[in-house]
Image (tube, rainbow, N blue to C red; front, side, top):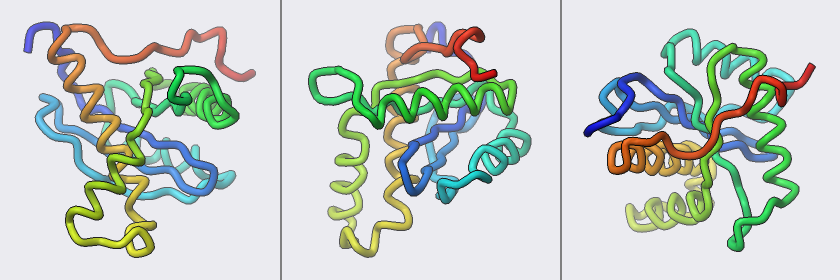
Length: 157
């Protein structure tokens, strides 16, 4: 576990309708679901409340690039949301490639016997767990944090 920065992290899976939230323990042993936040004007306020409650080292926000690694409309939305989250909370935000996290989440829920329809309310939380666990595992194996931080000059005014 050489180079692992100890501290709670909150994983955020940003969608157009819902935002999945997950957290890990300070030692990064396990990422677990927290809640699904409806995407609205109040979303940043709720995430700021969760930040106050859990006091994360950072937010890990999923960056939905396409399979070739290029940006999409969802990528731009996630970057903008991440910058607004960092500006609102003052907590560092790290953008992490989340390719296939939602697909992995749906597969895990199917294998546990849940239908896609019955999983709609929690799939975003599970996707947040998947992306956060991948980020933790990468940092533990390489000693370097996953993804990239948002420079302060990219925060919205």
